[in-house]
Length: 210
Image (cartoon, rainbow, N blue to C red; front, side, top):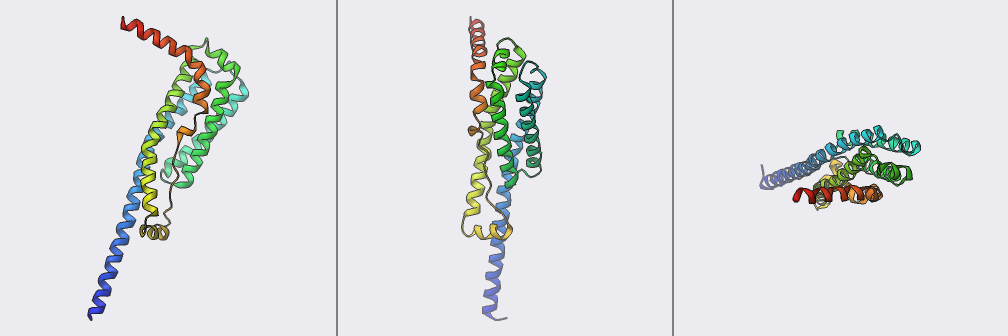
C-alpha cells in the first residue's frame, strides 16, 4: 500500500468521522428542542382543561362565539397532538403556531363580547375562568423562551459551514419558533374584566397585612 493511498484513507476516515460527529450534534440539538417543547405541551393540555371549564360556566355567553371558540380549540388540540408526536418537526410547529393564533383571536372575541363582560361582573366562576386563562397565557409566554433559545441554537448550527452540507444531505432543516408574546389579543381583551378581581385581591392583601 503506497503512502498516497494511506494518506487518502486517512483523509477519508477523518471526513467520515467529522460527518458523523456533525450529524450527531445536529440530532442532539434537535432533540433538545423536543425536550423543551414537552414543558409547553403540558401547559397547553392544562389550558384545554380550562377551556372546557369555561364552556361549562358560560351559559350566559353568546352561543355563536362559544361555538367558534370550541372549533378553534378542537383544531388546536389536533395541532398539539401532531406536535407531540414530532416535537421538533417544522411543519408541526408551524401548524401549532397558526392554530394557537386562531384560538387566541377566538378567545379575545369572547372576552370582548358585552354579554361576557356583563356576566363576569357577577359570576365568580366566570371571573376565575378568565383569570386562570390569562395567567396560563403569561406562563406560556415565559415557557416559550427556553424553547425558542433551543430552536435558535439548532438553527444556527444548521446554517454553519460546513455542517450546512451535512444538514442538506440528511434533510435537516431550520425550525420555526413559538412566540406566544405575539398572541396577546385575548390577554388584552380580558384586562377590563380583571380589574375588579385585582382590586379585591389588593384589598384582601391589605387586610391580611394588618
